[in-house]
Image (cartoon, rainbow, N blue to C red; front, side, top):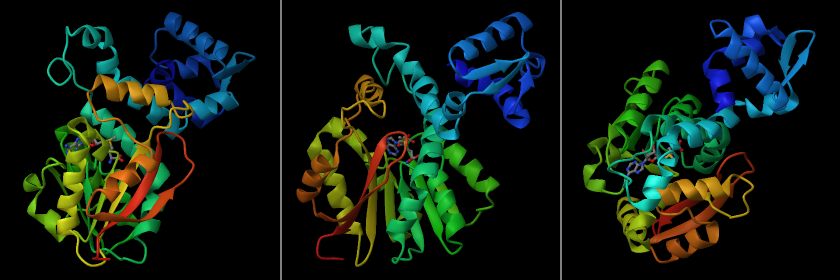
Length: 313
Ligand SMILES: C[S@@+](CC[C@H](N)C(=O)[O-])C[C@H]1O[C@@H](n2cnc3c(N)ncnc32)[C@H](O)[C@@H]1O
């Protein structure tokens, strides 16, 4: 929370710009008394070094304030903060997720987007290379980061993103406008698990992606996930691909597994599974897993499965 506050207050940007900065420069506009104590806290926590009245980031502070670190902290503190703050009420039944408590859709899409864009765009581009899709559909597109970066890599590509969160779709539209993608990118509120709600442009897609969304449907049981995979199998024709990216919970706590697990429990989501469990799910569906991609990154360890309709590839 302190690192997020330091970033939000503008102090982090001012420090990055100068390398070394005085308390006055860092605390521009902040209450002097709180601000000085706050800087002392960051120094004692090993985030800042202080020398001769000036501050700089320590190596640990540099890592903790990287784009990915801030996004990961934002995921738990900002996106799931409204949920974890009511943990006691959720535990005792005084509050129910979905009625009294919801995660923050806008921050969820923004922070997930930052992690996905930095960590996985190259991997997705590699998986799609050779297929040269003209149109890509992203199920649970969040703030559109992945599609927008794919468009930058492939000037001929058009994209359709759907998400259940209106805040996420609004962010995706705004990001795509800023990237100058009018006419190439469509973002709509729709339910990834109900193809009847998808916009008509979705049917033009010759590649489908879904990153970090399908595991949520395990809350309705494995058969519900298999049903949506089978539905996609009906729509994929020769050479078309569904690239499913799913975070793996490995219960070794190296990538905040315990926190990742807890936020899924509190929000009644299905629990993410590892690749062995997903491969068993694919076997029961009409999709075949052709390849598995992964890379070592910070954050939820996401595995990508390249799926094609049985007999169609
Ligand atoms: C962990 S985020 C991943 C976002 C994005 N795919 C990424 O990798 O950055 C999960 C996203 O799935 C969306 N989502 C959850 N259930 C959905 C549903 N039934 N239909 C469409 N989107 C859904 C959420 O709103 C959220 O934006």
